[in-house]
Image 1: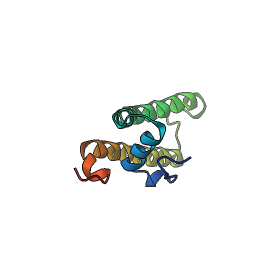
Image 2: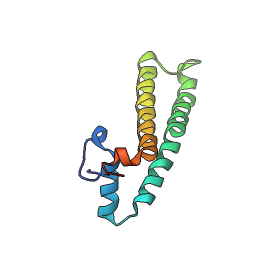
Image 3: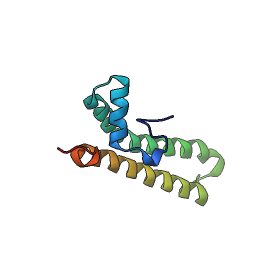
Image 4: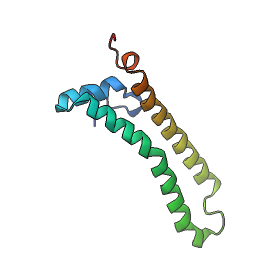
Length: 103
């Protein structure tokens, strides 16, 4: 699925979201507010999911329900998610630079 003409997740920038808003007839402010909302929900949801998985596995695996490979996977997902949140917040705080506009 493309967002503003870009289909590589890591290639999506604010300008793609703004183009998507224009293409869909949504206000740019609405889309930016939704991105900020997403940023605020992403890490807590990830931590909640990890907690739920540990809770489900604890009766079977005991005190340390995640093995090293699973811990590494959660760490990588957390780092990628944090990077995404930082990018969204950078877009919002530096929009003129990030969206390619002059001012």
